[in-house]
Amino acid sequence: GDVDPAASLNPYTMVGQVVVKGSVTTLQDQTYVANAMEFGGADPKLTLTTKSGIINVFAGQNINHPILPGVATASGTQIALKGKVGKEAAASFKLSGVKFSEDSKGGYEAAQFLKELTGQKNEKKALTGKAVVEVGEAKVPECNDKGQQGKCAAN
Image (cartoon, rainbow, N blue to C red; front, top):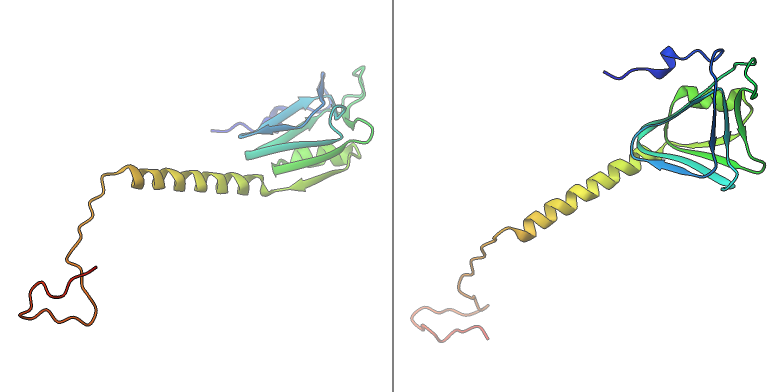
């Protein structure tokens, strides 16, 4: 089964630093774990996007570490979270006073993409299969061919 990373993390004993300078897009989970984190620098509109996973941010609160704990952003950076956002991620940003926007459509977009991809595969399968078409005799409107074989013809 899945392991809940938050259950084994103690924010008061965390060490290390994570720096994310540009936007990140993944199909599955994104997990960032460190005492101190900084987002932004290369991209003023930094976006963390997951198509079908969860965005996890576990920021420490270890004040005994040489780097100040929590989450920070480079000056002027706007953070957008697209997809399912873990409760710890939202709490880490809020606790540090970092403003961010959430758009939970990431999972919906992935579902739409898979639906379209599956539809395209089914369409290709239908087109590449050996189809047989049977054609009957042509019928000409308002023509009675009783006893007049061949007199009513389709042009």
